[in-house]
Amino acid sequence: MNRIAYLTLLLLALTTFASCELEEAPFIPKETPIVPPDTTIIPVEDFRSKFCGDFVFTSCPWITSEGNYYFGDTVTYIGTISKLERLGSLLKIRYRSGNGRIPCPNAPVDAFIHPTVQPDGILKYPEFMCGNHSTFGGTFLGIDIVNFDFGMGGNGWQEGHRVHGERIR
Image 1 (tube, helix red, strand yellow):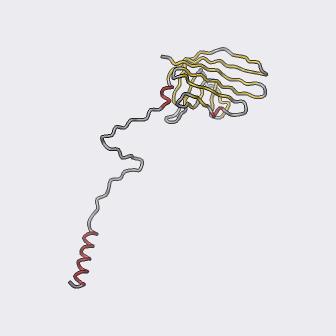
Image 2 (cartoon, one colour):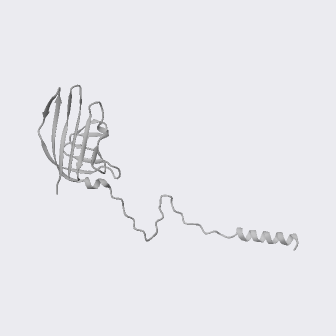
């Protein structure tokens, strides 16, 4: 065959392949996981759920000044422990009525608190650690009892609350 025949066949082959339409693959967003149809998806349980519910709280305000301790009236209140955000580790513990006060930025006290809880039940409240004389400690005993204590002050005095809560069954 001569060169013209080869060139003609080559051009014919290229135009045939160039004129074919390719089928587009379906668009799958990167965020969408590809899950086989027979797969069961089990949602992850939020570990905070076991700590939430209605509790009877007993709180006792206290003041110390120059080594002397003064305790206020004990108050009993039916309150709640709930999740404060959809994900994460924050709880809202309402242990008294009222609005409370916010002595540190984003750290309400005296009616409710917003601590974090660890899976083992340890409560932490880093937002409350403002100033040199802020203290907070708390823990769940199992899932039915919670105890926490906090205080703040300075220059020879400190005030706070000691709180005990028991789940209502």
